[in-house]
Length: 417
Image (cartoon, rainbow, N blue to C red; front, side, top):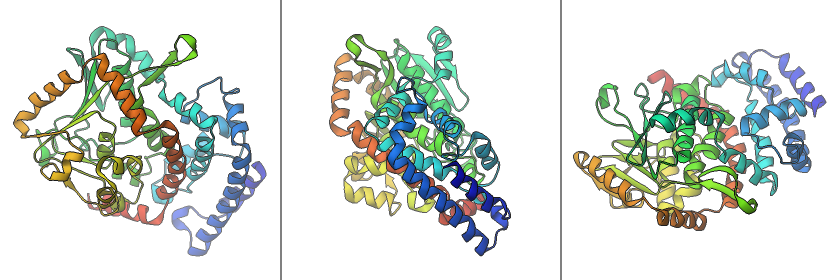
């Protein structure tokens, strides 16, 4: 592997920077990369379990996706890009990158396809983050945590998470993913919390000044600038905090060797809109409320990327026809439409939404709710099916990040905003 990677690197190093290459030079770089990737894929097809066992010491260590990728770069030179190489890539606009993250996509597809390595990695990603464990004592004492893009407050047994990136309408980037997972961990680990709420904060944007906004989806400006990563954003988001909302946080082994997860019911309130990633999150919540003028959308075709696990979950919620209309056709689903009741459990006028949210929080307390939500989630979404989906997502999303149509679309968006 190391020799094949070195040959590919030599060819690419002799060429100008990606933005300055002629069509023939771009073709030469693509051919060199493709040859090396074919060898990586063949190697992983045979040795993925052995690689994973080497990195995790026989699956006795639980490494998150970032640590696993970094470890693979050191232990198996040429298999995935090194942190230093990725740092260089990260400093470039998306259009000027070499596409090294595609090799990470190949790696994680192989790991997640494995019936032994895949479940172990999912368990690793369900464990609380070191940042959350470090903040937990203070949060238990005060009931408050300001994480930057997310504020967390515990009142009356409810953990209230507020997304507060008012500068970009709660558009997501790597930092918000870290803040969200930390907040989810804290809410789940706090024994004083019975139920959790996620809501957007008030915005300062002229069009939405003073109004709450749930989420504008992925931050396309950041994507254009090269700041949206496969591992720290796209994979961590799905395998981390969103999966924890659904499954709970994995703490330690219970008596008898059974895995111990801490789960809570989750409520979401959409005051204006939940676009892209914001809509994706709603699909794992137990109860969703909306203002009467709110809407959801999944503009995947417009942006060119895959909308997380929505292709896996949305059809189950709204049916295959409507799912295709939203994902492939970009249909915007407004709260007042009859079909919106497949996404929203309650719709209220804006002035009545606060009271309705409090009512939902009261109804979702109790041990019987926890037991039944667990069984509902097991029946609706098996972990093995999720694992299979995420294996293919890891590769396909990495390819989409570097496709010409995505680069062109986010470039036009950045230029017009």
